[in-house]
Image 1: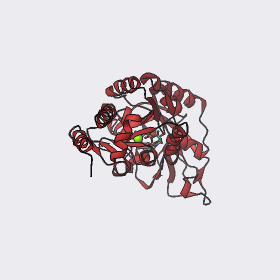
Image 2 (image 1 turned 120 degrees about the vertical axis):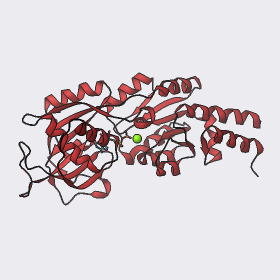
Image 3 (image 1 turned 180 degrees about the vertical axis):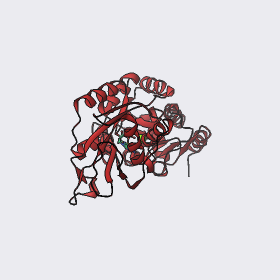
Image 4 (image 1 turned 120 degrees about the horizontal axis):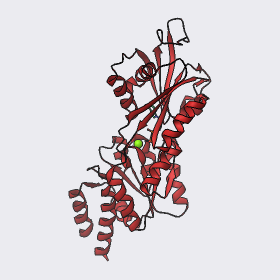
Length: 325
Ligand code: ADP
Ligand code: MG
């Protein structure tokens, strides 16, 4: 039988927009030592706008945006939406693209007709070229060098908590690539532009971090974004522990790292990428309109998409426990 107090508090939780999928985890929430938050879309609004473009010589900003928007044509990612919007705002015609491919935690790739683009020698006679858009993890995979003035642009953007993604042309397809591990399918692409994108910290995030600290809970952040963006957001919010540039397949290891230090760990996230970490955590918390995968991996679902509900969850767990003694 379900103990009466627990049953009552599960419905109390539901009335507060918390769907409890695992009651044991709900009870454990009062003992959490650390809570790990996904950055983008959880601590921040996740709505990136393009705030700056830098290009190599001979490429103008509009051409860079048109190409990038073409490659991002099929992606649901916030970054993709922002790039498409920026191209639309400038009334740019976006070239056709085919063969869209998401490269998990790194970026996207497509084949674009680049005939008519300046400096546009293509890989093939029909004007098609492989084009990529992605973050630092993508550049590592492609072995692409960042020209000094783009590096300076990226450093400055990073210090202002702006996410930077890069446009890379060409790159040799390698047939020996290991698709399963997302390993390099292409090498030696030429970096032609960088885009700085601004995200905004959610107002509630400040209060969440303070309230969790008051409860003696360590606050950590987990993101695939660059180290300097992560550090800037963490500094602003007073977050204790930062895991940045983490590939999707490694996110659960970071939760385990904290557990190995003897901590009981909660994880808050919304994305497909967060699912393994939500499963790994002692208390997995899916937030908002979380993806189905995130919801199915979580112990508790915060339907109101308010990060303050994480604090309410811990307090409700504490209150239930006191009553049961
Ligand atoms: P997060 O951990 O912040 O939720 P993701 O795992 O979704 O981020 O992505 C990690 C990084 O991969 C992004 O910061 C970006 O650099 C790159 N990336 C992912 N998807 C795209 C895309 N559609 N366009 C450009 N870059 C992308
Ligand atoms: Mg995310």
